[in-house]
Image (tube, rainbow, N blue to C red; front, side):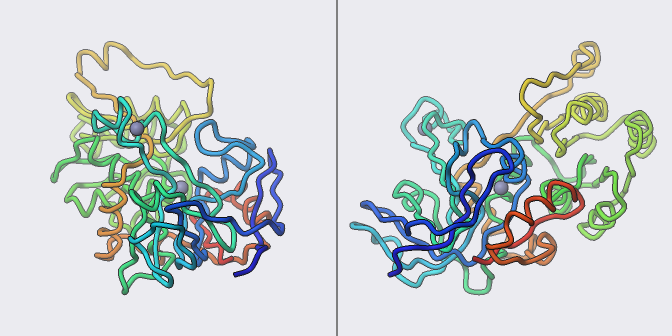
Length: 346
Ligand SMILES: [Zn+2]
Ligand SMILES: [Zn+2]
């Protein structure tokens, strides 16, 4: 076993270095994984820009959280996985003991354990994640497909929380990889999907994912009018906000019909506020939801969905790059919203 490896270390705002660090040593129950694919994610770009994430990562720290690879070493007491096994590990695991876990809200766990360090040759998977949220990759799936489990799990949880039913009209605002996963899954669930985005390339992708109607968003008011026109003047049953700006949150709240549900899925910058029409929310009985993160059950379901071929790396990963290029990749992603994911191959 090597002592040193190359890994991306985040030092602060836009300060990221790919440098030699010690290969992590294992404690009881931990597993060491040789990373075969680490996927970039909108969250990573945000973290790179801001230099930290209140819950997920405090620099200096190894970086990256969507990964799949091979088990190359196991800590004392590990029986669940053997050397050479192909695995996908989630980036967190709940404690199953706290107030929220005991109420079935594992994503809100008070002691949610996060793991970072996917942009590296090796990553240590801590015992709790090995035990509760690491899975064998089905033989027919590639590493890049499997690594989509984490973002897809967030989406599946969002779908469930929103109570989407077959036959519903679902408006999806924002067509990055998360929005596009919503489009695809909403189609798989038998709904009619209205996709709203700003760029032509995004709308074309949404069409490939099965969107029934495409709306190019220039002015929110025009987009709202078009959604109403497409729904007999009523609005959508469900609106999913997958951008993360106050403007689009406000737009989403106005896009649903009486009794409709809005999911504020995209996290806005901290300290931002939105204005909501109280009469509209009250007299139209609008349900407002927000979804954060995922649970182990949703990671398992995501692997099943990927296994069935509904979500594939082909549709969500635009390019592959070696680890040394990570800084350029992050800079590129900052300025190219139309790009979905890059697979980093350390
Ligand atoms: Zn992610
Ligand atoms: Zn907990």
